[in-house]
Image (tube, rainbow, N blue to C red):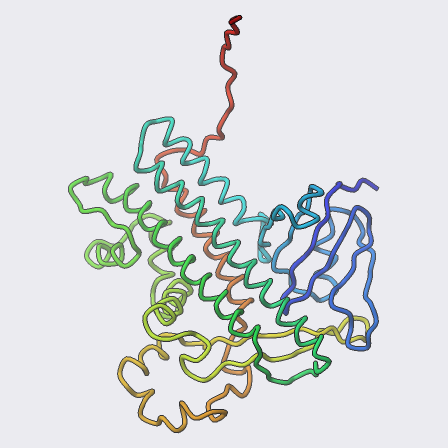
Length: 361
């Protein structure tokens, strides 16, 4: 069986990890609540992700360790978030490359503005993916900290020193994700609006693009998709609402109810694998409204007294890591959509040899 000389570590929903070396054996961390270690055989190098999903795990992404320096932690691994719904598997990583190729094409054709925006988009895709990894690492630390305390029990709530770091990681993701959203809006504006009428002022954000679309809605597929996603109730609108909440109103962890970590387990062969969930409110725009109108402050005893305003269940929330992962893939799909309106076809950089003259001194 052919096996690539690469170590792979899968990041799982809930904070778990699965490590695969240069053979079919894969190891799960953490161990089951019974203390048993879980190891299993995968069918082939290429079936790794499919085999793990078949066990009932949800995969967030994968670290690739290709050098000794990476394996020892001296150099960061190659990280990629995984696209769970459709091909390509590495949608966001592919878009990071694709936009760098668009920037290269614009540079070769001496278009500074398109080269600049495309370069920023390429950078920002990678930044968002890394923010997602940081959130996953925060989950992993939170889970391990609870397990080391010897007090992990399913279906409990808790709060410790790691919890605020998890929410800080999510807030960083939200800010970078909305920066990418605005870069894409800027590129679209330059490609379709200002290219048709250069006298129109430059647009550098989604909000500016939406203002233009009030009187002149888009007719192309990419524009229609972007506009629809920004309508209330849709994913890009919700992303902006989360970002606005944490940037302009209050920290996410206590913007409404005080958010606690929930413990859970994943069933695997009769054993219980520990995991965690960090809740975020389902309707961030409503949280913002309740604070800006003053409604939130009408009952300070309820909202500010210690232990009276803690979240009770996950029923009216979504998991932070799952939300960030899904949003990352939606951003990757938007990157692919906006790339279709680029006036410059992606062009891979080619290193060309130059003539060297060696002279004796």
